[in-house]
Length: 148
Image (cartoon, rainbow, N blue to C red; front, side):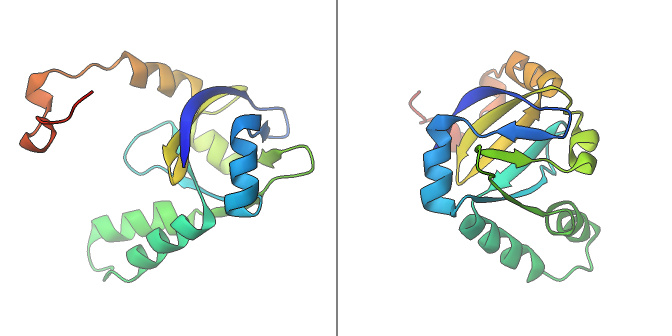
């Protein structure tokens, strides 16, 4: 569904415009709504889910017993911090200050379409991500037959 990478500007009020190419998809597939939460695996990144995809993730996570610290941490970072956002008439969403501050998003960010969700990276974290390279020892058996 969502794919591609776009440099984004965030204004002083925390608003960012969803790129035109993605806006039609957000409108038709999401009713102009997205769910924002933290990426628990990579610093400097937020996740923006389609509501239907988010509900599956949320329900699956909340159904798990929270006696494990890992499960509790995932529940806190994903469900506890989730914010429901709606595009305004200009195709913008407003990112909560707490989320922006936690991942270091100031004026510039990068929006990456990743299937059922977007990843919203701080400019600095995105640069670090792109600078990473993989070598053969990073590939497990399940990736050896991947054709790129």
